[in-house]
Length: 75
Image (cartoon, rainbow, N blue to C red; front, side, top):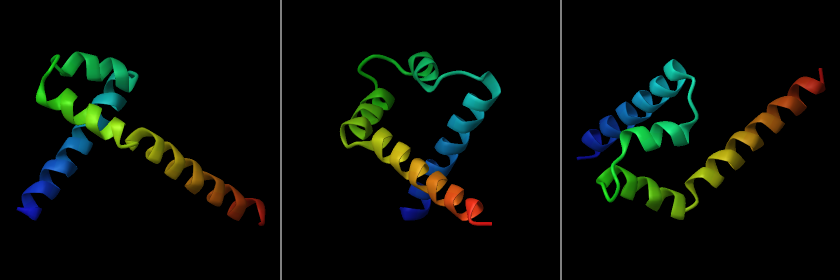
């Protein structure tokens, strides 16, 4: 089952990224467009948000960006 879970997660990430890049849209607008109230997708997204997903992503990307910036400023 781990291979199936990996494939589902990877394809979901790919699809979401492609959608955002192709439509040049804000993620919330696309979420509103592709989810239904009380549906499975919005339930999953709400749980991820409840667990701090967005905050963790922002902090991780910010930390990486700051690290890269420091590496390049030393040259």
